[in-house]
Length: 166
Image (cartoon, rainbow, N blue to C red; front, side, top):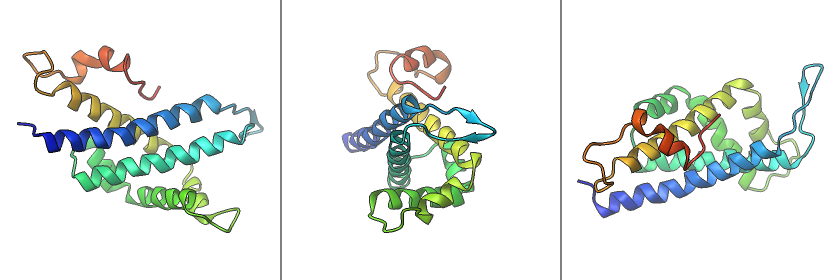
């Protein structure tokens, strides 16, 4: 049986996930990535600001996940087997939210040097956190259904309320 403290912990965690989602959407909306001889650049520097805040906020979601000891097989697997990138994401967050004298901050650059690997991990983690939250929410007692909802019979409902990674 779900108690009020556990419910509040999940909802509190969700506000950070929601913030990450909003920042992710702002980042994606700000992108204009023309390709010039294999070089991709941000035409609008604001994109980097959104990316920085999105990555930083996603690390807070990870940190809270671990602190609250929430469990999901895929998320736990990713966090355990990608500790190197997760550590770089933590350093990236620190570099974003703590003053750094260097213009080219190693805390930022190290994460980017992992290339597509960190991008794929961030997308997969973010999408998995969103899926976890909606499945948890849909299975709360008193949701009006006599049987627990699963991801297969609630996908349409979930997508209409919270955009997941495209």
